[in-house]
Length: 276
Length: 314
Image (cartoon, rainbow over all chains, first blue to last red; front, top):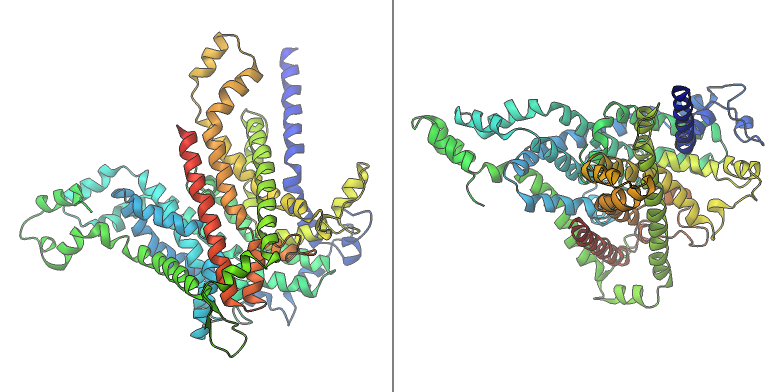
């Protein structure tokens, strides 16, 4: 009897948690569901939850739109995300190693300050500078701007991974006559590879999602996906199917990456407030 | 900076004829604690110091980038205007803090409650916990777009839900009296998981002894929650809330996409007003003054946050 009661209680608790977490999942469900609906079904009243005549028209609209070359924007987003992540790792990993090894707390604080500073305080001067040098609407400008957001995060998260590394390993290699740079490259970096991958993905996500830098610094040639979706929104106000299809297409890669590295994402998002 | 002992050890241990103890490589080895972080620190400094210096300089100029006129030195005129005649700026400060304080309060309450509920074994716990990450990483522009459709007064699904449970329809982002609560709903949807996951990590790190002692003394479960768990958890909760507070002040994407500061300036936060001053009206000098004030506000809140955090850790 007791066992059965326990089972029921367990099931009831799971049900309670499902209900509590439902709003979180519902937004994603609604996004995907809308993307497969015809415009009639998208704005039907009362609303339709599961599309009755599922259609790919929304996706076709997004992909085959000469005035809105989706693949070009996808390529732009990818170039900028990979560019700023690569540079960010090259600059950030040695710094994180050094800060973790020699407890350079002053530098860590400086990195933190960069994280706290509002994005718009970077955007104004960089906009004026890039405009002066004719760099608006170049991938270079976007990569530099996204680096401002990405580099502090990369350094901060990597400090955590290097701190977890037993310092004896590094010391032993140094005594064997290896240079500190060799130790970093041949011993420390391979040992933190999982952390490196997680950090890279986090940086890619931040760049991929960035809107306020891209909306100002990108132009017709370098427009990234969030800006493209925003523009689509102003032109296709009630074309809900295509709008949801665009939103789904841009969100899915990020969600997939986040699920792969879920263990590390919280420490990245909280900027080291918590270690998991 | 003091010479790191491990580097000194390495030098002593190496063969004196080894090339690594002489010349450039030896110098590099000795200066490793400077050379390794230098590229990143120089980049951050350039990205941080240059913009801040330039912004300070711009904030005492009057300059419309759309016009051909060069910047004109006006000293503190921009600041005086912002603090005296510019009612839109005063409104934006109020709106920013209204949005931030309402959002962070709701998110902290919900996040801690959910974490306490998650802090036991139940079927499906792992999956639900993993799913909780998704709102935080989803592209804000895409999410804002979906909420725009869900909030639509006549065609949106939210008002359908309200009528189903017998409530009158709501105006959501379409009325000046409801726009901030509606935006807070989006922000809460996105960021409650963060507070929940931070609190959950804090719960996992709590010591077991106080509970054993309380059990022996015959304490009830609510007593344990109020007298042990929450007091022990306070530093974690404060950290999470302060973290959100700093980020929430800077919210831009969802507000810009959903309302652009409307209706009637009811969601015109400092960030939105400043963005429009710079990139819609091209008043770079005035916008720079706003950046300086906004930066001071965020920095002030952050310093206060560190102080509070230190006080609660003790």
